[in-house]
Length: 232
Ligand SMILES: *[C@@H]1O[C@H](CO)[C@@H](O)[C@H](O)[C@H]1NC(C)=O
Image (tube, helix red, strand yellow):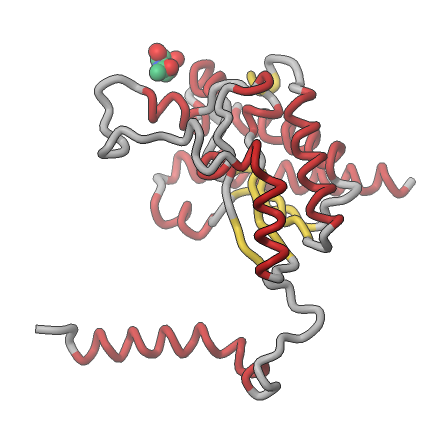
């Protein structure tokens, strides 16, 4: 027993729709337009590892995967080391060069930059890591697409007010976003506030969506402010 005809039709239509934007490439001997950004992506918790290195604070995911008796990941694995991108980013960039990609979507670890959110100090080692990474990417002609929040945030914010459950989270997000824009905005041209907001809309309750939407809004205005500041 396979899929019903209706399901098959929907599946094939879906695949065809995703291929539509590539039609011009097929008619062009499979070459992409010169301004086409072809890239790969990662996220801090899934890639970096180094979960307590160089002054990084604990994130909600560190807490979640280390919690006793919680089987969040069936075999008990976690992102403490992951693919060790924090230490092996130069090798990873060489692989990107070999793949001939010209863009890389990465996310910043909020707790690496601000171990205790706006309630503690800026971790200069965290800022330095992303500065070095961004410079190394640009040196190879790879445009960084920087996501500010890919589901990981400082555990401090969870402990203080329940993280995204509280409207206070938008103040922390704006503080963090502003610091990132000022630290990396001279080289990073493409910013994303939250990873996959479409899934957020479908999968999380409204009381979490609201602070996230407000945080996005506040951050958008912060960015406008920073840009005006830079231009004046
Ligand atoms: C996770 O956070 C809670 C609340 O602060 C704390 O009680 C718990 O010890 C933490 N778990 C780990 C494994 O750090």
